[in-house]
Image (cartoon, rainbow, N blue to C red; front, side, top):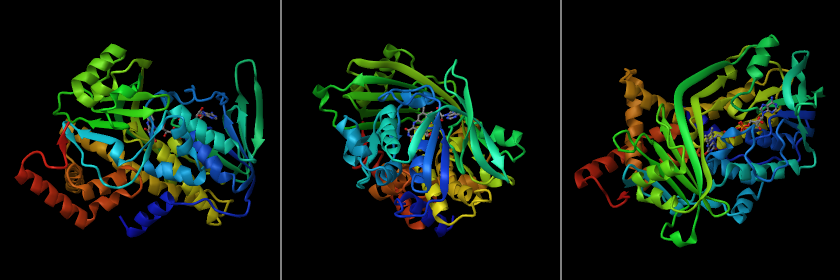
Length: 479
Ligand SMILES: Cc1cc2nc3c(=O)[nH]c(=O)nc-3n(C[C@H](O)[C@H](O)[C@H](O)COP(=O)(O)OP(=O)(O)OC[C@H]3O[C@@H](n4cnc5c(N)ncnc54)[C@H](O)[C@@H]3O)c2cc1C
């Protein structure tokens, strides 16, 4: 990977809001009012006289899960890249979340375990936000809709209207039964942020444009998440997040990942995840029994009373849509967030990816684009972000699936996977390798930075040293 892609990725991560930039649009319309749509609306608020978010759900509730975001019951961690971006563009989200009892988690408050080994802290001061998903969305939405030129139209987008090869409006209907309001919102720029089940591709196909190719990696994940009271008396547990990864060798009863985050209202949000046919418990008793049989730290976080019963969620695949390959697309249309790429959620990349897509939009609009041509330059920028996230999550899943099935893979892929395994192993015991690895996992740096020869040498030295010293080193401790 060239240095320029690494630098481009970092410039997207670090982008600042512009000042006094020219207005490009009269009305920009964002279809979908979840995290990706809200962040795109924030960017467009600098560039349009008015921004209208079209969203069918009632958004007036304080911080409740809603039907358009069924994953909202599950654990949602905001990685450092997404958190820092949101803080720059919508200041105060972390502080307000903390004031409501969510946790800003630095390295001293994390517990990362691989089977029975606790990963060495990386010494960096990156913080992620452990918060219930509905509250996070509420805080972001509050800031975006408080902007004087942003409003919400409660309706379902049902299609697009075109003129001279450009999108010129959004058809809408809704919102509820009995209210058959239908109409067209005239818009001179449109963003699809309708999530994983966005129908934009179908609309484009029916309207005579190219449908972006859909790539899927089947990797079913089963989540089960419950909320437990976080009692002050359990103060011996001095962490705010727990991430426990289990290899197939570990007797975990089919649980591959367990996580717990200290969220608002003095609660632990606890999640168990299994691949394929492995479904973590459905009842609280099953859930607690499973946690107790795994590790002490998981038993401790599930000791309090249940404040919300187990809610399950299954996702069949990771998927991405290749807009850069579509030859014929209308001008003044882009797509962001899960509508473009949605990954194995256990890597926690979705909301940070959405922030980086918004960053791509800001960069594209700031580059003086030809707005009467398809937004190919936007999709090329976005591809850098999607490729990076896909390499980590779908790359990891493909390696696991190939290993399970004994699939032969090309020598180059085998070599890269061996290097990554090496880095992951060394990250358990070497703070420098751990930091480099975390920077990529947190989406702060491009994954190709892991193939830096100096880092690989360090990783090799660390794992060789550990092998001669014995299984456990000073840094990695038994849980
Ligand atoms: C189980 C699970 C756990 C996850 N955990 C994490 C995590 O820890 N960290 C993280 O960063 N990400 C996580 N994610 C991913 C995260 O949920 C998404 O990436 C994030 O919500 C951004 O998605 P989005 O805004 O693109 O789409 P969504 O959040 O899915 O929202 C789509 C929006 O579009 C609206 N909509 C749908 N159809 C229409 C229409 N026709 N017209 C108008 N609006 C429409 C919906 O009502 C909704 O508001 C997780 C996902 C899952 C499934």
